[in-house]
Length: 101
Length: 179
Image 1 (cartoon, chains in turn brown, cyan):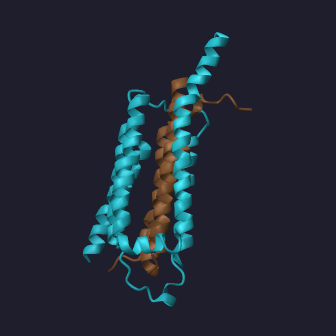
Image 2 (tube, rainbow over the protein chains, first blue to last red):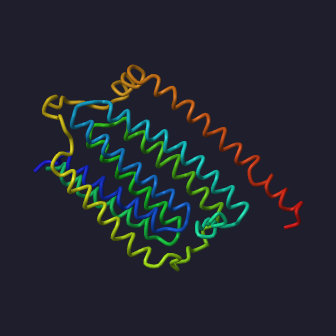
């Protein structure tokens, strides 16, 4: 029995679903950000597994680009979160509902 | 055989970390759960011969991103527990079912063909050392690489702008109105 690419893909699918559940379930904006990170990481895993299977280095290059985008997203997102917290003293997304129609 | 054992152990570690992250009440525990998952991911990258990406994963994610998260958690306050009351009825139950369905659909849909076209290449052995990754990154994908430089610069400038001008300026406007 060997580890095929399908095992990695299935694991990545489960981790992605967990990240999606975290975004939908949690109220804390920080934990929602972490769930998004988890989803990006699971996509990285699929890229690298597929790249390894196909013998292409582009899978790893894509993973590196995703890491760059995730880093940029985290810095800006956390800056927004800190700005919101300094103004409203909460990280709960339910409390930030002024624009609710 | 050893690959199967390593995969099994670290798949369990990754899943345990993810479950901890989405269930823990305290954000610090969530961050540590995500950190565990990221280390397990780095092990998978090593198993898949992506050694450079594994190192970058440890350095960038476990080192920089999670430290940033922990800093912000400390800044925003760890003692505030999330309230578990549901503002939308049955939100958690429905979310659980939706996530389960999503995982099932992805796995069922992908089961037949996770990767297409692998037979055509015969999957040559590829080890993701710095050299092979850099050859591709600075060869075929130079323009994309350079655009990430712009992206990171813009993100850094935006972060500084948010920290410097954002809330304090609004705060000043609020106090002038007397709110």
